[in-house]
Image (cartoon, rainbow, N blue to C red; front, side, top):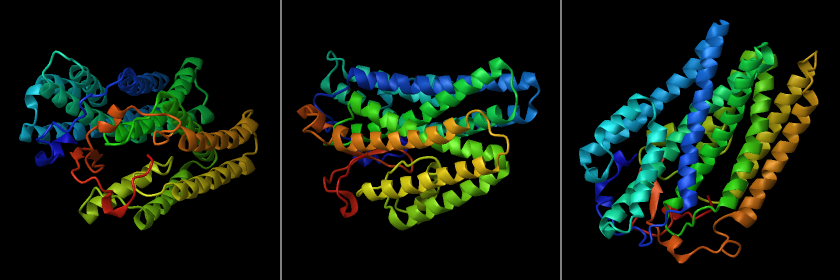
Length: 408
């Protein structure tokens, strides 16, 4: 992340907004994001203990792997960013102490650490007793840490939270558990779904927060965006889980086919201009196609209307096919059959309605509906290098590669 930033683009801190906007809502979002990840992982840790005590070795191992492996990956990525950043020594005198950084990463708290570091820098940037130059440095560090944390949360959501949701939902539907274990499993499913949806919303907020002339999302728009994501994710998880309950291992080739379809689509239609080398673009789009198994996180410039229409049509048809096959080949219908079928359909449709309301009436670019203070338009223009997450200041105000500035 900021360890990979080009120092020639970050020498000057005078480009930050003179007002250094950092609202109470921004602070709450940072804290809430860290809490969501922490609660989700704690519930999964309780499930590891429950499965171990109950003697469910296979479920114990799977649950433990889905906790430790993503945590190690995220910690390694975060540490690598810090190591590379330390070589440049950019603003080291303003950063957190090295031993604090190391200890938090040793205890696998990289996401929470970056979120609270961003909050710490943001609060210092609001201290009017400090010189303006220091405040601008802290504001820039706040933006960098927020950007890093949002990408780590996105990785965590689809490496840890989503697999745990599917695994625990599968166990609930296939094996009788103790009442206490089943309660924790259901809580883990709920928080995992909420955590995944919030990770996407948090990422979108961060992208807008670090762009010039891109006013951030209001609390009402954030709510609608969150509801859109949750209501679309729920039927997707339901379809995949119930299909796995009946067909088990066939789910893997189904997901592989979907991944190949999305990867081909991303290669042929979507432009991501942050990477110079072809192999980096391929790796990034391969990872993005994995996220597209569950939901769409559009990082490409240009009009999103057609892309959303294509993706959600494909997803709706897939969900209907998976649920239909489960219904046809399940001889003994569970009590929730009607709820699963009708609820999935209604949830998906309502989610699409929330998406349309968000883009038509609540998107920050709709200044007629939500006027934006002039100070919000003076944020430093940066873009997120999705290959490593860094924010790099752009000198040119023209759209990249001839694409128009579009809504995020």
